[in-house]
Length: 366
Image (cartoon, rainbow, N blue to C red; front, side, top):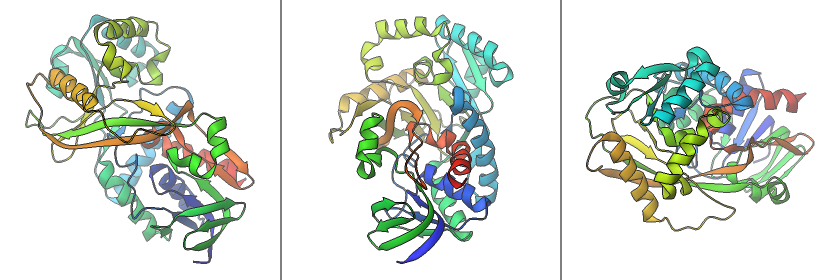
């Protein structure tokens, strides 16, 4: 393999594909190098939730731009997408208070719901809640391969099952030979330390492991929106600066300290076939322990069953998601001329990548 591309993308997950999409729209030749036969990482192990509204700062801007890109790409590439929003179910007065504060800041991005309206949309009981109409849902197991096929049909060269050994200005060395590059974008998520260990150490990049499960739908009906809870308020930047959040955090720590310690984000989405993707917990390390603690799955199953008001849930699949984590939501650095390293270090790659990529390429190609 001796060839050349205007842009070489290392990694065929959603962040890498987002850069490839933007480069194609600019008329550039693109090559994507991926060590596996297809995307197997965080890009296909997530909720498929475009969690736009709960972001803050730069992430919110990227998410809003990415939302438009997802809707357009779903039409062009022919994958399933629903503009069904998100319902955050409030089960305590302090959570309703936070949603009131959130609505004051975000206006019509946050629509208050009564307890009856929450039940009608989700089947879940509670004191009330809010609907975030800007949020979207896709099936990541379908959407990511569909994006790769769409790109291949537009001239992007994919080098599957190809390991990148070296990266330098103008040249990517792979297990199948050299690849000349006008510019290089490295989108390998938590594996950034495999290629740039000093950079990963400098910015404190770690791996975050998530426990997630697919369960049979206990209701036997469509639940169109994604569903978040009070635990979710502790996980997303959009809630972080709200005065009422500390009361929610203090109560949850008092009532459910093990769940808060496990980083529980109690939420779910429904797959097109009806099953629910539920989760998730968060555990951080540079090198993760390979053994999954059953206790974490029990936390997720018990709390989801309680949320849904059912006695038990039938598990169909279990898996561990892994994403890059650091002290910032994005790590966008240039270790050498013509090379950008772009891991999303906050678990929001699917939500933000299509907004982030154009900004990265604007700077890199200039």
